[in-house]
Amino acid sequence: MSTRSATPQKSTESRRLIAVVLLVPLLAALALWAFAWPAARTAPRDLPLGVAGPAAATAQVEQQLGRHEGAFDIHRYADEAAAREAIEDRTVYGAVVVTPQGPEVLTASAASPAVAQLLQQAVAQQAAAEGTQVKTVDVVPAPESDPRGAGLTSSVLPLALAGMAAGAAVTLLGLRGVRAVGALVGVATLIGLVAASIAHSWLGVLTGDWWAEAGVFALTTLAVSGAVAGLAALVGTAGIGITAATIMLIGNPFSGAASAPQMLPEPVGAIGQWLPPGAGTTLLRSVSFFDGSAAIGPALTLTWWAALGLGAVLLGNALKARATSTEQAPERELATVG
Image 1 (cartoon, one colour):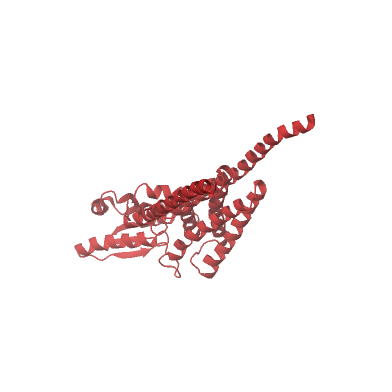
Image 2: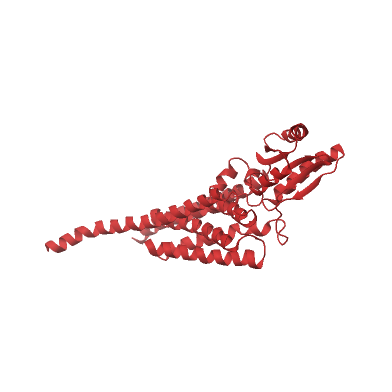
């Protein structure tokens, strides 16, 4: 009797051992691909770039930039003022202005220090070959306390982790329906206030409206936590792992936070902007450094994630309540007959 019961137990343990041995290396390989591949293939791909000046003067510049096939999406402007306005509106990352004294490079390190450096180097190399001087103007500079944008970039992962922790906690603690929604909104609000206090008030890596930045932090957290709790409410605790893996292995490395979405392999950059980490980073830059320019797209993306997640939490609770009511109905009928 004991021998028969021990055999299935050993078989189960063997299957679990094989699953662990195969699954862990697979997850490690997936994580390495997700983080290392985009970083190793970073290069401009249809990067929005302005060229300003008389058409006859800018033709040569456009031709030189065109040699980098597929690298730049050229936008033409009449003069420097128009190019500056386009940068401030987040239409382009920078611009090359043709002047009688030589080319002038307009950058926006607040949008992406990596892109600003790339543009400066690309124009400087060409100018050096022609023996001319290049003037560089940072139209929207990054804060002095965070010139490389490392502080803002580093805020992406903690927000994602906080959102996943909140969603998992609400699920595992058994909170449902309106209570779960209230808990998720409350946690996200507090995280937004704390994050803004640290990033803006203490570290000084953000320079925009304090309350708007807190709102972005809160909405980003709610988008993640709502997605985690929502999927878990519909499919069970496995939803926590599915959503967490999506956010960690796709959302974070595909966000383009360290460079720009147009610097990642296609369609990685576009995919990243449809996920909370990428949309949250873009929205935070717009709110903190560009007075909200180009904020509508990422704000809607985060709002949809939050709304769908919280809606799924309510739907999951309603479906469970209906299932429970259906199961108890025959028992009540039998009790009535009896």
